[in-house]
Amino acid sequence: MSDQDVKKIEVGDGAAIPSPDDKGLVSAWWIALIGTLILVIALPLVQPDPYLKILKFIPDGILITFQVTIMSILLAIVIGLLTGLGRISENRLINLAASLYVEVVRGIPLLVQLFYIYFALGRLVRVPDIVAAVVAMAVCYGAYMGEVIRAGIKSIDFGQTEASLSLGFNRRQTMAYVILPQAWRTILPPVGNEFIALLKDTSLVSILAVSDILRRGREFAAESFNYFETYTMIALIYLLITLILSKLISIMEHRLSHYERR
Image 1 (cartoon, rainbow, N blue to C red):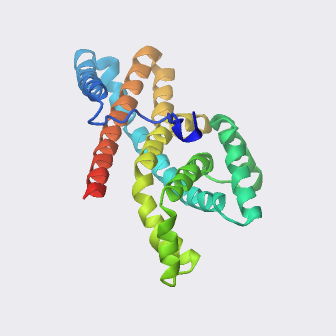
Image 2: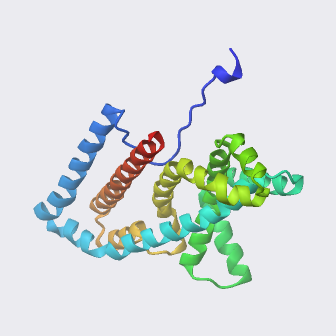
Image 3: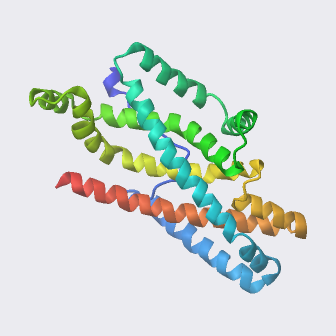
């Protein structure tokens, strides 16, 4: 069996995207969504204390979670773009630096990185906890994003580069105006998946005193001692957000594939 006959299995740590071709996953998505909505609505109605109190206590945590997620993913895309370009660079020093960054960051658990960057930044300059959290998340996910962008660039036929160079573009112009715009359509779905994975991992920033969903839940549980009820509601909220985002990514993937077939 040749190497070309071997298919790679790619499984990310993001959400399972409900593709229309996977009827089982689509059905499971609908069951999970309906079940989650029923529980989120019914529990506060049936038992206002503590479930309704929990819902009233954590909205600001949801906002912080999305703030950290959005800022982190935007910074991670910038880092990932530089890393991806570095990984395909013909300059051996740049290529080595980008590859070393990917290997080191992907080899260290995110929780350890959060602690390290938080305390490392603290020794240099005092920064808000949320800034430290965003930097740590972006540095970690920038390595993964770099591989996504590198793969997206590699997926573009080399003939596109040759045609651009023959028209008088230099390599930098070719990358900026020809390759990256086409690669962006390819990498959008995995970037969306990384967005969901990052949102779930923001639960770790609660250890840095960032008042995200989990931190607010821990505060409520510590005051009320309703640990089971609190973490049940926290889990349902995370699941509801993830399900909605996964569906949006599925719609985006479907539209992109439809656009490419036209």
